[in-house]
Length: 348
Image (cartoon, rainbow, N blue to C red; front, side):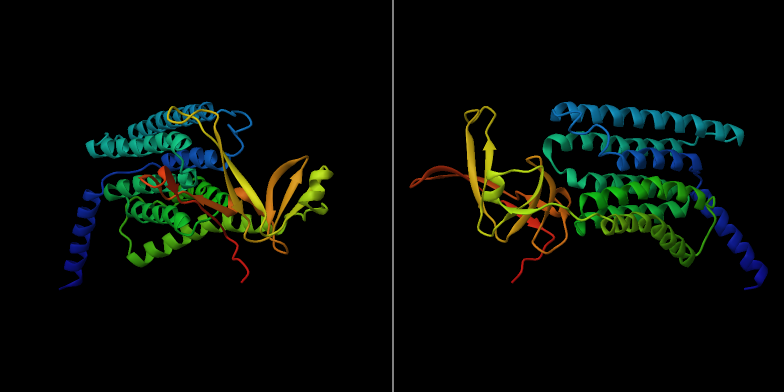
């Protein structure tokens, strides 16, 4: 085959590919969605907190309101800016573009409703990963009809969300990675768009790896610096008995192995009598140190001689199953499984 014929075939192939991928995602769309939802994720523990809304239902409704207003506002602004950009280029809205845009809005709406539902049904540790999976799905679907780079990036965002759950990252790590993936990754992706040009798989791989490093390195380095710069706890270590007789403003309470910690359940609802408090005694497997401030735990704890941990970042509590039984010898009973784990490996 002559060189001229090969060039003609390449030109025909490029024209067909451009015809199949005839959508164009605007750079401002990625920037708007990334900054808005990435910012919400990053500041999520500073706005609408439990101190501002102690009631769970009120806090859930407040978050639903904020997310709905954000989703509606960004969608409307994105629509208006995209329409102006198309008018400036004398382009018309294609049917496929409208449908793909509806899919994106649907996925974001699912994220809003899922966030609201998690206040009542649990699973909040998955919220940031779930938002990444939804955003990745939206980009991947858009990339099927638009630029190939969107497919690659969408798949990477989905992989990031799934990996955060698979590696059981702590709360702060998942929050910072999700905020960086959307808040930094989507504007960066907007700058990388090449208007659907045909690129080799190796170049796409290099672009994807570069994007991945730019997205993941800042939150991981920031968390490492924060952990390294954490100031040591300056407080006396006292026993539980000494704390009970003389509680000070700031103390470290040493709980020995074998200490009994009762877990109290406040029963409510219409099946059992309200106000009936049940108690489950749990026994410590290893000694534990807890930081107290004015009689309240600060959330910092550690095993003796190790580094300090935040309770919400290093502990996992699961109830994988609950079962009701009616045994002739003992009568009715409820059985369940309670799993409490930490990142610490017990000393053998």
